[in-house]
Image (cartoon, rainbow over all chains, first blue to last red; front, side):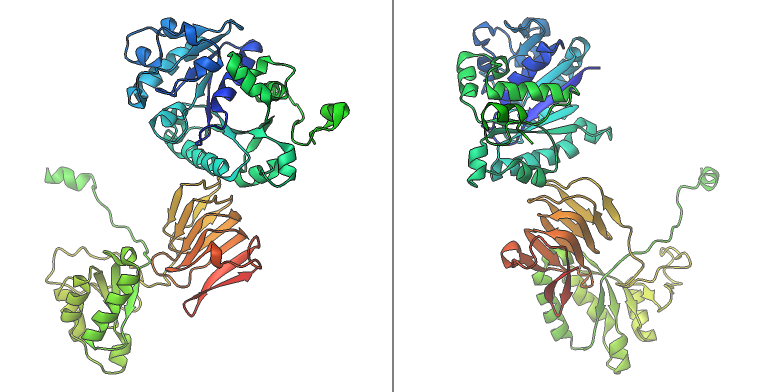
Length: 269
Length: 243
């Protein structure tokens, strides 16, 4: 049974698109046929992060309007042939999306794909609403600072009251916390909230901590999802997250300051 | 048609209990009553807007102060309240009330003595005793966290077995219990029940209020923050006490 994952946060700039690209790639690399959809109509970014911006012909809105078929619009990733990208339209706005249209596309994708990752735009308006409406699982991307945490909390409230699962009284969306741009040294100085602080406020299952890392920016610039950079800490963090999501037990890393080589291996308690 | 209607019952009478504010009068000075009511309403216009109300004239009759019930009901209605009963009235007062369609509540049960008003449905017995200390309305139980931006309103007591996030709002006409961190706003006794209390196992609220008397988080001092406390009203002041 296909599962729809929404990557959402409420706040902008916390790493939703980076996360969507990384986990979609991670799931595909693990052998699951995966599609990733950019819901940020008008502010298209996912294609850049995935490095497929020069291959976009048709987009999400074209498919909704019946101007192209899903197969015409889906772009196969150049690094992994189990991964497909459905880009957003850059020339339209969120009003071009309709609940009915999105539902139809997701139903069609569900027949063929194991995981469908929806990259939500920031905010809680129409685009974000439609991105989460049909979701089975939600990855809440939060930065360790108060405004991001509060916006995530708001988004969690919307997930539990306005999603399809909530409206139809089905089993609620499974919610996971991804704490991104985490810098243990700054937490120590009191400049950032700690993992414990964020978990206490959100009371949510922690799927993983992604450290603040130069490799994320490098990956974005080169159009390669950071998870492919297996040497980088952020890449490893995303690999852990995908493995944990798929049911593997892996100890948390990147929560404490680096402690040299041994600390890297045995740290993260 | 009429036979069908008799066969298939399309209505039924049920007995239920409501919590309704009671207006207890101790003076028959109409001008003063109107003035004080206006002041009360001004404090919480939303609470009182179209609020049902039972008039209690026991104190007046005890002190042999007569009051023109027709005029009183007119005044109350003009202020936007909806009188739905009179209690402890004299025969004369009860008749005046009934003429205006306001039922008479006797001390033990309600009997609507209105033979000439056939449109009044017969009250099922035993009829409810309408008072502020009536049998409590059902308790609302919430087992999941109340997130920022969510609002919960309970007619009776509200029990929350999880946290209440900053930016969330929980309201109850009765008591509020939060077995988790209370970081949002909690308003108990929102229909004016001054006996309502708030209980929480970790007080970090943005705002707490009982029957319209409120404190914001700035007013909460360090000794009660992050503590398990109960909050209640004493002489119109909120008291926050450890439990």
